[in-house]
Length: 214
Image 1: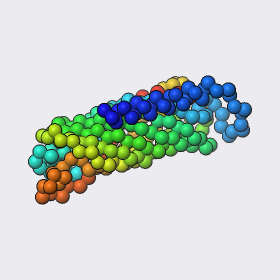
Image 2 (image 1 turned 180 degrees about the horizontal axis):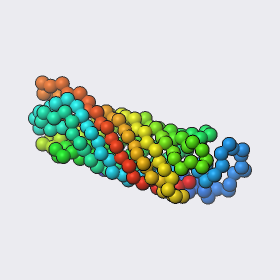
Image 3 (image 1 turned 120 degrees about the vertical axis):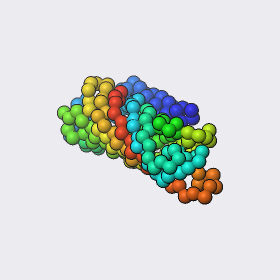
Image 4 (image 1 turned 90 degrees about the vertical axis):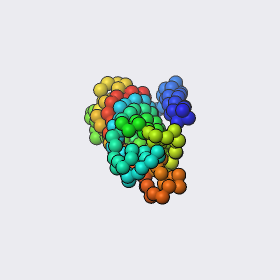
């Protein structure tokens, strides 16, 4: 719940910033190589389905995150959050992305990831509807195995890349986002068991709609 609360606070603060800026008197125009409605700062919200292939070392017992003897599982869930692009230089924009990813495996295990990333987006031209982006991320992953109520939280990091396609003034279609993450999920070695279980690797794929505001 704390992770979801932080995402909500970030969204409210960013939206407040956008409203405050639009209420101020317009600044004198400055020369720019690009013109059009896509210039300036941007705030976006999204709630998209996500599929993740999580792989790691085989484990056994009640703390086996991938299930006893398994080295990979398919997880599904939702990816929701917000981004704020605050700096533009030519065709590139720099911003911050904050998200919560909730995943559930068919084994009964689950993983809740709170991630903050630096978002670097690029628009090929003022007339292009495409806006690809790349985003290094860091945060925390809270995991639980199917056979135990114990949750463990560890540092999670990763890299995501995707592309948004402009559908309208306030809506983009996130054609595809692919992310690679690593986190030490709950496992037997964290409870003094005679095993050596390392971090799991995550390959995330998501798509959906993004609602943005200037």
